[in-house]
Image (tube, rainbow over all chains, first blue to last red):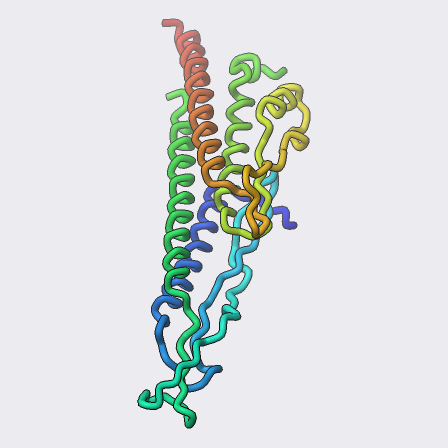
Amino acid sequence: MSNQTLSLFDISGRAMAAQLVRLNTTASNLANAGTISGTEEGAFRSLKPVFRTIMGDDGTATVAIDKIVSSPAAPTKRHDPSHPLADKNGDVWEAAVDSAAEMVEMLETSRQYQNNVQVLQTAKGLMLETLRLGQ
Amino acid sequence: MSVGDALLGIHATALQLRSQRMSMLASNIANAATPNYKARDINFAQALRQASNGESIESSVEYRVPLQPSLDGNTVEMSTEQTAFAENALAYRSSLSFLQGRVGTMMRALKGE
């Protein structure tokens, strides 16, 4: 618990930044989908951001990226002796990325980013109107 | 009751509370994807009563009861939050126009037109 004062711009702005990091991880996961490695350790594992709430004063809260973790899903082992990266047993490992799940994640991220933009727009409009009070 | 309160009525307090509630709803929307985040909202009628009596509104902040609990412990439901946010923004705007009316009245009285 920290005692910082969070303005509406802090709340939505930081949430947008967090969603953007999430979108970036999704982009790198999708970019690496289907990549092949000659070792199990060398195969790409999908990255997932972990969100954490940051509490402010008066019941306000925003969000930040706590850490980015690699998914525990194991790379797929495939027997393909003709592949240039195949090991001595003729095996290669495919990146552990679920493309469909990543696409869903991308859509959800984009929607939540849009929600924050909308909040910011509405709040900004109301603040500007309040500034004009009495004119 | 201060002079400002007498001139502006309940709308000055209401506007302040609406702004506070807007921040809280924005917090809920910001944390829509955070595991274990519990959505909160202000019980507005109670908060307004407390604020106009000069009391703290802390006891009016309540946790939202989700319609369908999610597996990651997050209780933010986008539809609920968006509706509440829209309703709150509209109420803010109406309080603002009431205030604008009051300010206009005062200006006319001061100018003696």
